Image 1 (spheres, helix red, strand yellow):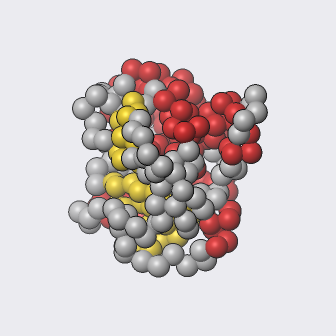
Image 2 (tube, rainbow, N blue to C red):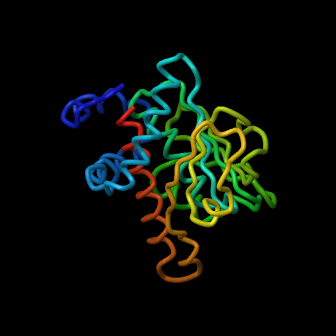
Image 3 (cartoon, helix red, strand yellow):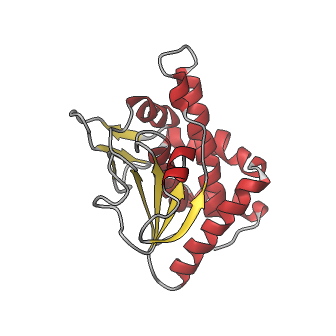
Length: 221
């Protein structure tokens, strides 16, 4: 479904029903104002991805997006969560989002904290590779986020769009087996600020950049 920018503003009041209050405030105040500032070269890749989603949903099929980075610990998870959230905001049905890495580690607690600061509800289990349950609304389905290789369950094995969210994974995987589309959307790694006074600000900055681009994507479907 395609919306002109002005029409989008009118529709948002109903499309955002069911969002957690703090998250809705974040989207309106900090995410939506950035959509028009998404760089042209990234809009091109996002538009390719939107066309994939539209073609699948128009055919009555699921549009499966797998976001891939090296360790599946930060950027790919942020993209998975924000893209599913954006699809719900714009009423784009049939979208399923996943994430994976070229190797598995764990969903980094700093990235989890950035989602909580944005307003998401996050269940925090224990363990070496915990399965975080993330919600954007009280009645929204849980998104289970944990580190895995991109071909591990529950990720799809064929017909999905592979979205490369880091340069290292992009270079390491010139071919993603089973993917119907491969899109390059690398983001700077907030890990560079770990254990520094800039840590929270850098993670929030990256989370909101990814959010704006995922909202731009779904606004173009």
